[in-house]
Length: 335
Length: 273
Image 1 (cartoon, rainbow over the protein chains, first blue to last red):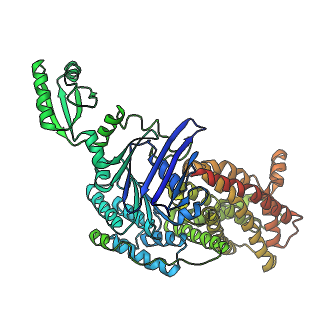
Image 2 (cartoon, rainbow over the protein chains, first blue to last red):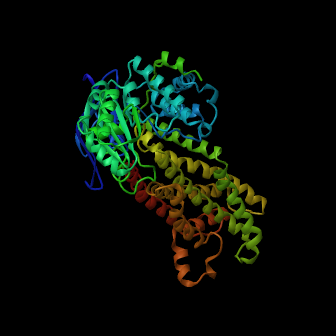
């Protein structure tokens, strides 16, 4: 078997007769036994990639092997070797937690007696034993996600696809899920995770790929990514738009990446916050521009995007959402 | 909630695969899906009302409110009950439409498509679940019918044949309803799309009233359309009265519908996710 759990070569996926290029020449190699992060905003092609790798969707061109099996020619073998869980927590809300796991176990063609045992085991492990016999309609968002993840794990797949597993969750539920994912990797599972959160990718993933409009715009370890990005965002707010535009011209050179101007707020990413802030203050003071406010913060995904692409992450997400052909489900825009 | 304990032993037990031939897998997957759909029927009271209470209301409405004003060769209640049975089984196929549209909307179909299950089990499980539900509803309506004076004169075997015919007919049609469920953007639209078809097919027919009082242009349609043919056949079988070739015509319609609609729905299912 290949040393990679996932090996995707030059994947292209178009929708609407080529009008929308959801994935444009994406090559991915996911090593076994670790968490690999696919980072990007809505509409960047993350979910399309997961759908191709989990055999739900065929690539327009390019090829992919998952656990050594071709996703198009050996789709059945791929399906036997993967688990899929996602932000929509696709559990059947008319079934109980136990019934959901049982159904997925049987559809995975596991032995009947074993499925019952496995369902109880997973419910216990994910803290859902008390809710096992309640319909999942009554579950909280965090409980649904855990059950969804449990469903993906019923057949012990060596590779797990997690599509934005914590999007929309409260901080505690998010921490719980992170702990579960870390535990899974300790036991040898490979995880391909998509996320919109830099923090999540940073915490879980050793290696990252950043997608934007279906193209890979950066790859490396999260540390490399951060170093490249700069460690801190310096945010300056001015009294008026005039000052903001004069100010943004004055601070050119403090950061290696372009400044982002949004109304009266100007932001730059810098390596060392305090010295950059002092430098900016000196320059502005020299031009007699008074600041309304100044702050330093950790960079967000948005900042990664701004520094890598020069545009903000969220702007075009909805129009550019190429993940589904036109006229499909009325679901929210997603990647 | 004890998530921390979860992290230590996530691999847990060793999986045991079940060994079956390919065909038995298809059957097993269809049954797993059908069971899931039937459980939903029990869990959602509205759907049970739709499935059982509504046809009972129809029986009472036509038996006691409209029935007196409708003149038939034999007693109206005997005319009515076989018709209501046919109508109910066809309406039952709407369950397939709504259920599939909801599964798609919620993303469940995506999950199923990533599982090593038989591809046709999602549609097969839906239509089989509706078939099982229809069997139950036919039994209930028969009992209710007898309670309001329905007296089938045909043999028990002929009665069973009548039931079988309409169940087969409704099952074949349900593949068309499956297609609608897959084509609609959500379950509300799916229902709205199905009604313009299901209404004229069931009401412009010989289900509730004899065709003789309809205007001639409507009569031509009503006499020859498949639902009327099925209603004629079922009525004939249950009442032990002559019904011409209607059984064969109804079966031909059913076979034709299945031959066209099942591949259509299957193709749609492949494309949709």
